[in-house]
Length: 117
Image (cartoon, rainbow, N blue to C red; front, side, top):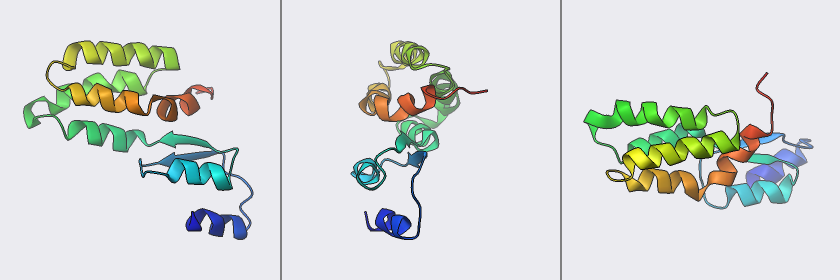
């Protein structure tokens, strides 16, 4: 909160999108100081965290199967891709799809609101 307040004191009036790494309470702190900010969880941190559960032999395949989720054009498409990922991998790595669903709104809603053009 102190860092955000300092930014405000230095003249930052608003933040359009804040990409965060999953630090507990940080999205709420951002919303307190900059209420119009859209908060998005960092995809790199999410993928890296997901791969922590995967054996070295399967990392490349799991990473490739995660890509359609975070490259989806809409929230609905991303949700469908996550369902497909879960159908394939939940038997081996159920924690991964659970992790993605835990912060689903924080992850995808900001991405889907903006045209990629």
